[in-house]
Length: 247
Image (cartoon, rainbow, N blue to C red):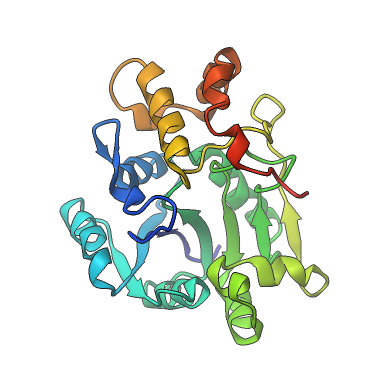
């Protein structure tokens, strides 16, 4: 098995909701909330934050220092190159890509991506971010560094550089891509648990407010789904803002 690492892309800049990655969630910054959640991924998996050298992102670096999480400062606009640089620096050749504005990413789903890759070591990309996969904001992508290098050399469109894996998905005939489905009790393509808009943050905070006890970041996704199923008014907070999965 190659060196596997979870790389979290994080920036303070956001057109719709500036500084969202450090906004309070359950009494701690959203990014820290996510990091604590990812600690439940099986095995000795490195967690690294990939941010930029921009002055506005110094607060992210300060947080990483305070909670002893390694970080990498790379390109502001070319996130694909940022991932390549981060993976090289930390000697990671199998990358699990995670976005910092997705505080309820499912550790069990990541475990499944890693297991699937172990069974299919020739795969270039393994992901559960699709209609029959995990709800928006709870899935992830596992991709090899070799394939990211190919994408880095050939990607010539802005969205391919900004979102890391589109070049691979748009040229699927050249790569081995495996789509992992979510269990039916989790499969909710109309639930949006990513933080892009103020309404998204309100929804996430509503969920946290209904979770009893401490360590809200450790709440299993299946419990969050049950909570939303019983409280459709929470789901409706941001449902008008998102289009849903295309496939």
